[in-house]
Amino acid sequence: MTFSRSIKIAPSILSADFANFGAECQAIEAQGADWVHVDVMDGHFVPNITFGPATCAAIRPHIKGVMDVHLMIAPVDPYIEAFAKAGADVISAHLEAGPHIHRTLQAIRGAGVKAGLAINPGTPVEALEYLLDMVDLVCVMTVNPGFGGQKFIHSQIAKVAKLHAMIGDRPIHIEIDGGVTVETAPLVAAAGADVLVAGSAVFKGGSVGNPAPYGANIRAIREAAQAAQ
Ligand code: DX5
Ligand code: ZN
Image (cartoon, rainbow, N blue to C red; front, side):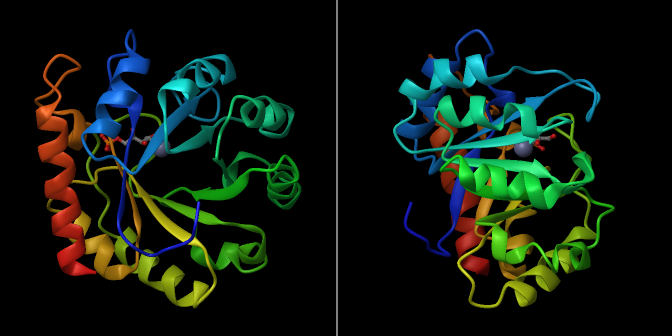
């Protein structure tokens, strides 16, 4: 993973066929995905349940590039080692998931994985001031985490711009997660985002048997974002 601010599209397999994760990961990569975004939910930190480290380990061999694991779980620390062993390249934990996010970030890097810090729409960027030197990625949630297909929260665009200024020339990715479409991607790219997670907007209209729409969707989001960067 060499650092660059070029636009990266990270389809979220939350919108994939859950009975076909391996083939879905191969299909989105073949159709131009840069990273594969994996949403882990526990029914406690967020009101939905997806899957855990065993599923991540099972899909890992089907991903050639970056496996970007977004943990929407609390507590986080007891499970870091398992997600690292499952082959995650990036593990993001939520600032809101517990009282000791500093320790959590140390543990993620300690496990040999890039550390991501995810923040909910209600969390200000000022909360990151003493954490920025410990992270490789900040994930700005542009919906309340828990479900795909929700509406983009526009107040977060100003937050992304503030975060971009705070980061300066540090090699920290700015990832956007939630409601990313051809319409919203340029707004966050202009504000400084470089990793765009998209679930419903990538998977719509396609399937493992008919993956060409995935490619068309990825290209449309990428081109809209690049034009605004
Ligand atoms: C939401 C997840 C997102 C979600 C995005 O809790 O973290 O990754 O799948 O889905 P869309 O792109 O449909 O908003
Ligand atoms: Zn996510």
